[in-house]
Image (cartoon, rainbow, N blue to C red; front, side, top):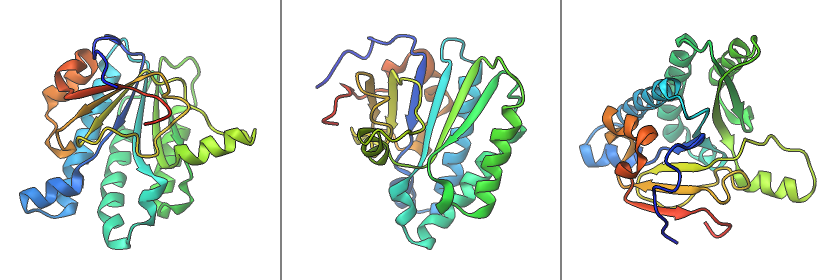
Length: 222
């Protein structure tokens, strides 16, 4: 049910669900490659804003769900090309105070993408006492993790998420982390992710009520 979007004025852990790339491409008469390239740049701007933001200590980027990997090669190639550019840029950032974790089943990813993800993780895990943590979800399935947890099988868990921001207008988690987000806020923006501006990105960390068209308390029904 709808909730006040001001209940978490300074969230410690934000999860981002970008959506609407293909819809944006069709509306603007451009290729999916173009849409995902723009989305990749927006994703980098989100990471940069996270690194600057003092109160947000953990940022989880839900990039590829396990269900996405079942799409055709023609649909997946633009996604992987943009993802590779995104990971390459993240590697080149100043991540002195940030540790990066890649979470999910990466077996279905191309070799280049998997290698870039491994490089990023190893490069940022060398030093201790990191202040911030960036989680990148690739080939992730919250439903699968929930089933494994019910069988008492160890799973890779996130810290509790207190705010989920979803672009694209759909008020759902789309197989994102389930256990870790229960009780948090799901803030939904109608904007398609390639349309997100730099101002919107900054606002999402420092005043997220302005980017939100609807808000929900996350429960098992979502």
